[in-house]
Length: 113
Length: 114
Image (cartoon, each protein chain N blue to C red):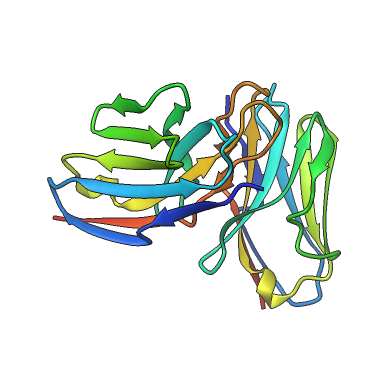
């Protein structure tokens, strides 16, 4: 089955700096890679996703890059703000079947004012 | 749509008691997932259903855990008997259809077993 590893487990940045979270996956058949944000005491919510037919996707201050050859993908947050503080989870799955998402272990991002 | 609904939001029970968690998925969603979240183990998939049929229950930790989905709008996760190590936040999530992969999570049930 799929195995997703996520690094770092914790990340502190100064407000306005960039944050990068990296994930690797094991199943070369995986072709859908979402990122979820979970604020303290709240539910995980999808913030951005990428499919294997593109190498990068952006949405305002958030971007995700995918390297299928190396089997890794990354979340980039620019101009970080205190409200970006949360736990971020990456995930992977193969869209051609009913396979469920395999989640990474999460990254606690803290944006220091 | 109200989103995925879970009840109760908080549950405190004593070891050995039966616990039932409830979930109402988003109307029209074909898939329903039960997750458990702890600090030590992160987000773990326990079981998921497609069109009310359990597809993969390999994540269910032991026979004390059982899940049902009697119809498209309701699912339960039952723990009997409960143990302190079952303390966690249990999330239910649903997904629209096979080609739409976003999972919408419910607010979760925080379970404490004393």
